[in-house]
Image (cartoon, rainbow, N blue to C red; front, top):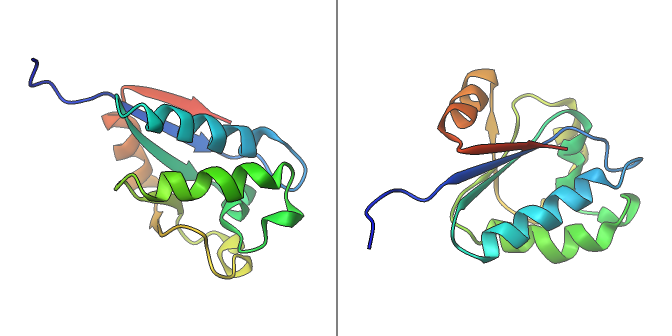
Length: 120
């Protein structure tokens, strides 16, 4: 048995979930990878992708992926992060998972710690 740390997969989502199915697919993939418990999955939303955490995902493309898979990512023990100071934070309502704001420096740290980075 190895004492090495598990790999860290950082999923950065920047696409607008109101007009693109890519954010919903990113959430589904991140939850699927996290379910195997072979890697630490970190999820970061930037720009309009912050709306993925909306209380009302029915206004987003492929809303079922958000209602089904976001709660699974919220249970991993690794916080979901969002772009610090995003104008979209005021539009969220009650987010389905806890999240933390991350500025450019914090995002740089997440990227540096990651074994793999996926961008949607």
